[in-house]
Length: 239
Image (spheres, rainbow, N blue to C red):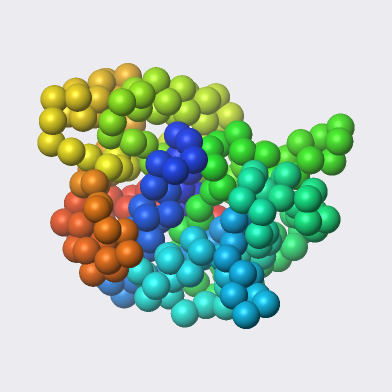
């Protein structure tokens, strides 16, 4: 049976994709049969008449994953807004059964699945008028627990503590935190200590601020130095 973990963040642009890429790279570096999964992506790039899911392409490149993008990211939208709104604008609503089908395919093919969310934990994915389907609903449907990515800088204490408490109240386990964009200064160091004290969640890695995220070798090096594969394996639960 496959095992998996879901990567979410305290907000948009906290570095979920870079972190997910780095974590998946570590699995594959250590010869674990692992894949990426992202149910929906908005803000895709159009190239030669095709929509290229940028996050999926980036993670695949860093981690050395060779899987059809359509299996890894079943819903891709060009409009750079929340998936529920992009789906409305482009008249292509998400079908959760299709998402589950692709997820099931990956579970059969791979031993480990590292999934990434869109935006934060309450990001809406489907708006059917009377009913909203959020990222938290997807995590529950996929039967996954989470790692939360948080910024190291200003505002992170409030965002991180609220996110962790909200997720725990949903009955979803928070298996660990990744602190991203770290700089060795008083504020960042104090933020990390406060987050430890207030959340009681283990910090799996502290990732230095990466000046050039297009430098694949640099990302790989930083994650090899900052995160232990043993800690990641302990976060993975049967899915």
